[in-house]
Length: 241
Image 1 (tube, rainbow, N blue to C red):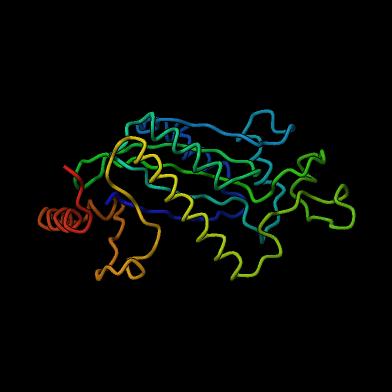
Image 2: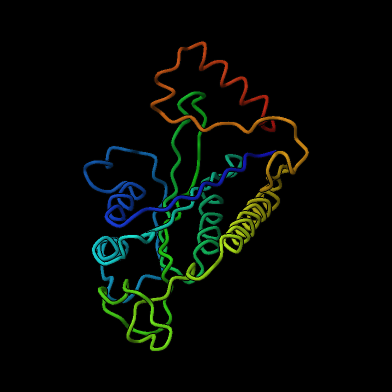
């Protein structure tokens, strides 16, 4: 079975531009990183002439203080697929996640700090505000939606008005669709492996889920601890030979 891992984050006002740059590996702070395979974007409003940069700059300035200024999905891609197939898969994943929302994707392929194996994954950064066809300047775009007179208010957030249960159900549905897309790509490549979006417990697997170890934590580990983690990961997630 291939590895399935999806992480969802949100960011507050004032963090959008910096996070977009991180994903795109742009600017002096990130330009020395050599793991970017692709950066693409779509659905940004007409006033966003510079694409993501202008949009996220406006979000940092005009989005409400108590609102999520962006959401990001980080999806591990099958290492069994080549770069071209993973890029096509990433585009489908971005469209599934974002729909009509403004979105950018960045495909990274760093090496695992422990094993040295490739770790392909895609970052899909979106705004909750999907265009409704009404032209608005940037300042109005991020203001509160006016249901009575939409042209007088901001662009409506697609997450607005949903209960916690509805949002949970939406999350599960998207996670399943991502797994379906990955399995379709693996099958098209002639690979007899698959992923499952369900929890280990729901799959009937009696073990604890693996933990993601960041570079800082790996650096603090002894060589013995690193070897133990590598062997444990191989046992939990066997790769086809």
